[in-house]
Amino acid sequence: MNPRSILVAETVWRDIESTRAVTDEQLSILHFLFGKNFERATRIVDQRGVKRISGESSGRFIFQVMGESRRKEEYFCFAEHYCACYSFFYDIVNRGEQLCCKHQLAARLAASLGACTDVKVSDKQLALLLSKL
Image (spheres, rainbow, N blue to C red):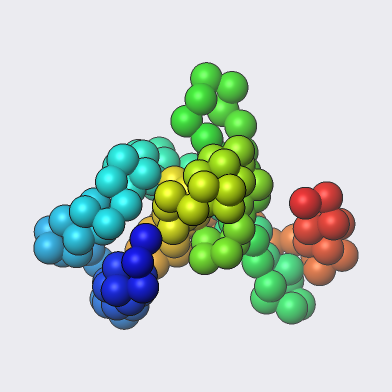
């Protein structure tokens, strides 16, 4: 994805975050930029498949996003930087074909719309969870 597309995407995300709503135009732009990954991400959000796991004292958090497969795997991700799924490493890191995977998009969309299931854990529990990544 070229730098201009990244700037457009970031502008759209900021607009959604500020209003907690998505317009048809914003949906069209995100669909144009991210294609099928965005469609899949919206299905995950519609199914309430995004959890934000937060440390109680620190406020640090990570997302746990369900997959679409029959096995209903769940992946840990940071919406803007990392996902533990195979697609992240194959399509984004290795091939550089995408900016982010559907799990990252689902996490970003759910967070922007306030549609995450919030789970509070101790900071120690969060650190243990993160150490397994």
